[in-house]
Image (tube, rainbow, N blue to C red; front, side):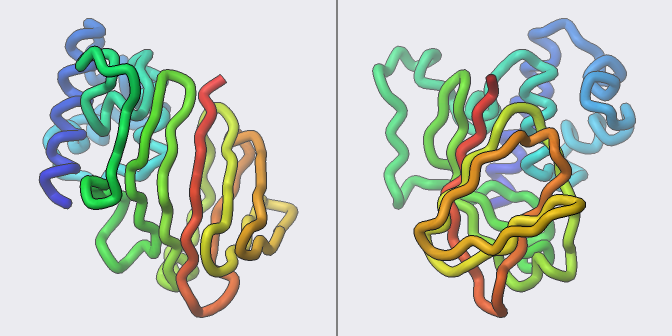
Length: 187
């Protein structure tokens, strides 16, 4: 897991330099401090998914480019991610935040993840925002999709679609973990 985060940190730095952008400029575009960008690039800070999405947008790339070499760079017609090859994306202290993301496939406009929401998410509850739209499909278990003023309980097979710019969080609806497919649309 640490290797994945180190790779992502290195890619952020590489893409930032390719864009001719300073850490200060990237920080301003992401609405964080220069110190935070420095910590991310030096692998001294855990990167949450919403932050990765903001960094990718600020750099003019898609999220998948930060997570894995894109199919455009490898001249492949499709990106295939086999279950055994799916890498865990570190998005918090393992076992503490309650959220685990597994990278699936992506493109310039869409990023997909398998997300496991554990009971620890309740204690670490944090509302997030991001650009674009989000689609959720509950594969297993049940979750509470919360906005600041509304809450929905989603069960196995249920879906939700909403603007990512709304503050939201996803929590387990019971004491059991749940699995979701998340699709982020960057249009």
